[in-house]
Amino acid sequence: NAGVTQTPKFRILKIGQSMTLQCTQDMNHNYMYWYRQDPGMGLKLIYYSVGAGITDKGEVPNGYNVSRSTTEDFPLRLELAAPSQTSVYFCASRTVTGYNGNQPQHFGDGTRLSIL
Amino acid sequence: QKEVEQNSGPLSVPEGAIASLNCTYSDRGSQSFFWYRQYSGKSPELIMSIYSNGDKEDGRFTAQLNKASQYVSLLIRDSQPSDSATYLCAVRKTGGYNKLIFGAGTRLAVHP
Image 1: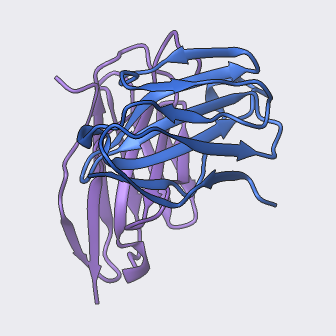
Image 2 (image 1 turned 135 degrees about the vertical axis):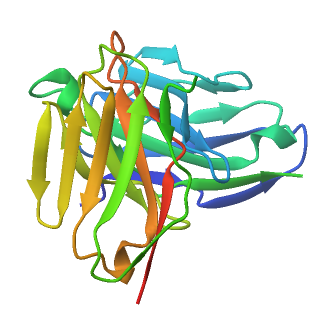
């Protein structure tokens, strides 16, 4: 019963490096989301996807890219890492059954990323 | 004005007391409201959801919603030290694909 799985759990990057944060869910959820959480702050939506092949920007998309080639996977790409991207990144997913707005999001354990 | 506002706390209550957490939101058309609990260094976990005006009870937790006043609250009865965490209020934004707007969270500390 894995749910939402994120890898890696921790990573340190140098400025200018690139990396991909992986997110996989095994619940056959159509909707998936990427958030970042800075210390003492709430979650900010980076990108979201309503199904394979469909993605859209959230509140803070600059510096990130996503793709959704399968229902299960929703990777987040950082192309040129900057210190401002130091944060904890959470992936979430939800089903679309029932009334669309009432289904909760299920979160992965997060990836703690430091850019030095 | 922030879309979802919470008092950052910390809210300190003695063990066994009622903890009251409040949240206000700006989008009058919002329909779905969620409370998540987040322990330090962990991911958010859903505690309660509420969609209609009034109270919704689940064990020691009660969510209260007042759409006219645009606030939602969470009451925790018989607070335990294990309830010490940050509580995030999330509001589903109208017109979006269930995009949630999160408040910054209220840190609750329950002391023995």
